[in-house]
Amino acid sequence: MFQDIGEILLLLGRTLRALPHTLRQQRKVCDQLFEIGNASLLMACVLALFIGGVLALQTGPTLAERGLQSFIGQLVGLAVCRELAPVMMAVLIAGRIGSAMAAEIGSMRVYQEIDALRTMNINPVHYLVLPRLIAISIGLPVLVLFAILVGWMGGAVVSFFNQAIAVSFEGYFNSLRQGLEPLDVVNGLLKSFVFAVVIGVVSCHQGLSTIGGPRGIGRSVTKAVVNSIVLILLLDYFLTRILMHLHT
Amino acid sequence: MNAPASQGIGLQVRDLCKSYDGHAVLKHLTFEVPAGEIFVLMGPSGSGKTVLLKHLIGLESPDTGDILVAGQPVSDPGVMTRYRVAMVFQSGALLNSLTVGENVGLYLSEHRLKPPAEIARVVAEKLELLGLKGTADKIPAELSGGMKKRVAIARALVVEPQLIFYDEPTSELDPLIAVTIGREILNLNRRLQVTSIVVTHDRDLAFGIADRVALLHEGEILALGTPDEVQADPNPLVQRFLKADFRFTPEPALP
Image (tube, rainbow over all chains, first blue to last red; front, side):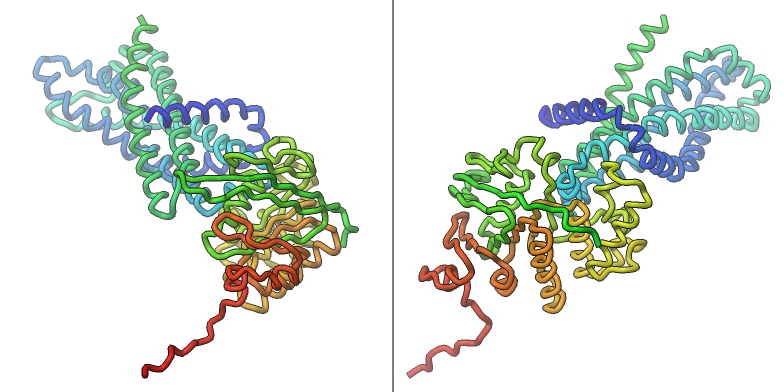
C-alpha cells in the first residue's frame, strides 16, 4: 500500500513537471473533456436532481413539524454544494471515467503500446497522463457546478409539490440565498478539483502498473475505482475540516 | 523516394545478466553487432530472446553488465535522442485509438519534426513502400495480422532509424507475407545501412537474411557466427534446434 502511495505521488510530481507541455497536448485534452462531458453530463444531472429531491423529502416534513420549513432552501442548498454534489459526482466520475482511464492505459500497457511510445522517445506521462489529468481537473468541477444547480432545483420541486413541506419556489430560493455565500460554492468546487486530481492520478497509475492479460486489466480497473472512492471519502473529511477552519 | 538518410550504428553487449525472482534469464551475455549488420538472435521459446531485446532497447535494466549503443550506455537518456532507434514489436503494438496514418506519423507529429502536410506525404510514401496504399484512414482493428506488422515497420521507418530491432517479424504470417517482410528487412539494410537486430525462431528467415546469427539457449549463447558457421556447429543442442521438423518417425516394431 505504501509503495502504491509513493508511486502515485511520484506520478503526480512527474505530471506536474510536465505541465509546460500542456499546449502541445491540447487536442487530446479537448478529446478527453468531450469524453467526460458527453459520458457523464446527463447522468450527473439526473443524479443531482434526485439527490436534491430526496434530501428535501427526508428533511422537509421534520422541519415542517417544527415550523422550520422556511429553512429548507438553506439546508438543501448548503448540503448539496458543500458535500453531496462534490462527493457524489466524484464517485460517479471515478466509476465512469476513472475506470475507463485505467482500462485504456492498462490495455495499452498489456499490448505493448506504451513500450512502443517509449521506443519512439514519447514520454507516456506527457502523452497519456497529462491530458487526462488536465481534462478531469476541468471537467469534474464543471459537472459539479451543473450538479449544484440541478440539485437545488430538485429540492425546490419536491419542497413545492410535497404537501407535507409546501414551500413556494420563491420561499425556497429566498431561504437558499440568505443561507448561502458564494464561498460555499467555491468550497464545493475546490473539493471537486482535489477529487478530480485523485481520480486522474490513481486511475492512470493503476493503468500504467497493469501486468498480465485481460485479468490484469480487470484488476486494475477495480483497484482504480475502489482506491479512488476510498481516497475521496477520506480526503473529504480532512478537506471539510480545513475549509471549515478557514471559513471561521 | 528520399535519398538514403541512415548510417547504421553499432551495439555492444558486455557480460549482461538478468534474473527474475532468483531465476537467471540472461547469463553473462557478451557480443557485438557492428554498424550496418543484420544480426539475428534465434532460440527456442523461453530462451530469453525477448527479454534480451527489451534490454537492448532500454525498456528493461540489467542486473549487471553493459549495453552500449554507438559506444554509449543505452541507459543514458540522451542516447535515444542523439541516435534514431526504432523497434518493430511482435504484435505490432499499434495504438488502437489512432488511425493507421496517425500511427505511422506519430513520431514526427509528437516531436513536431515536420509540418502536417509534410507528415502526410511521408506517411503516404512509407505506406506505399510497404504495399499499404490507401490504408491511412483505417483503424488498426480493421487490418489483418500481416498488415499490422507492415504498418509497424512503416512506423519504424519514419524514424529513419540507424538501429532497428525486430521482435518476431514473421510470426503469425503466411509464408508469402513472411518472405515479403524478410526481403523488406534486407532491402532496408542494404539501402540505408540500417543496423538490424532480428529476434526470431523462424529458421528460414534467420538464415535467409542474417549476416551473423546467435543461438540463445536458456539465457546463454550456444553458437555465434555466420549462417554457415552456425549451421556447421557440432553442438548437439544447436543441431537439434536447427534440424527439428514435423516428419513422423515410426517407433521400432515390437518383436
